Length: 215
Image 1 (cartoon, rainbow, N blue to C red):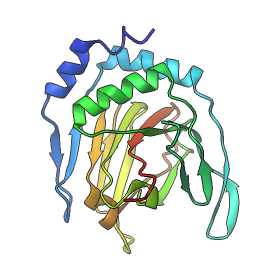
Image 2: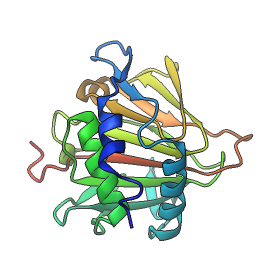
Image 3: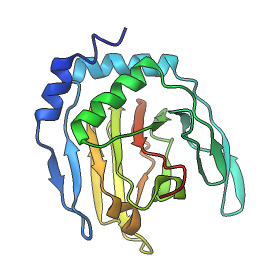
């Protein structure tokens, strides 16, 4: 049952809270909601997703090298929400009740529509995400992407495209939601670096709108 986690009162409370604005040059800024469901509901949601999602560790080819991605993942969405990155095709698995209910909550909070979600499970601080921008053709020229975090706090690092210096770092915490504006994917890259001292898992869910024509 998902009603105990996604009550109308909880969703209304989250959407009524004005987000914090994190300045980012060349963009309107990142919007940050420090809490969406509340810690106890978020704890239950994380346990359910860890146990129920069909986690996998596919191989990708990056710069001519093929190997498993350094994390587990699960792609879900509407039937036509096909997606691919680094040459890896991701046909969508159906929405689970928890993911669909969370999608509705994130839509109410951010004011944007989503038809897919990529769940990434970082089992500990050794699991990572390399530098990238979510600028695939399927996302269209103006992608709004919502990223919801559960579990261990991890650093979200940012740098301008074509540059190596890290310009910003955000500690993404349990039950925290950020909304990335389209200009961020055009001008910036982001990553989740290794953190050897982190032993607990982190689950991240990035909600996207796949556009079949790329427009």
